[in-house]
Image 1 (tube, rainbow, N blue to C red):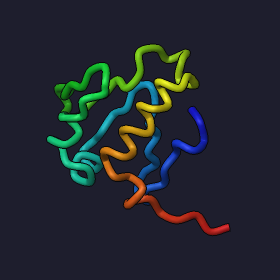
Image 2: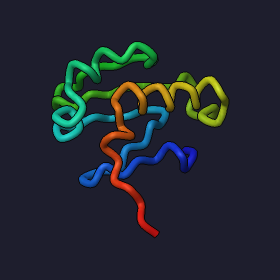
Image 3: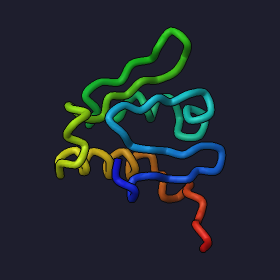
Image 4: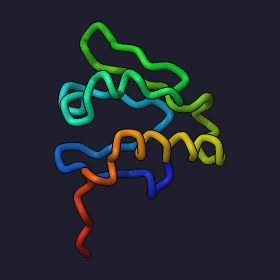
Length: 90
């Protein structure tokens, strides 16, 4: 995981990783249907417990490759995470 991808959203940290799980709070924040309609994922499925599982990349060992980093950027842009991120004060 590259550090630039980590986003502090207050109640949780969002990492556009190999696999992403969206619980109830994330579904309320981003919109369940919007999450389910992301086109660049390998797959998206709703688990019996209500959590949405998304596989973003094809290989967990290739997260550093440019085509996978583009997917990371795409999900951040699609969900408009930059608008929700809490600014860092140092």
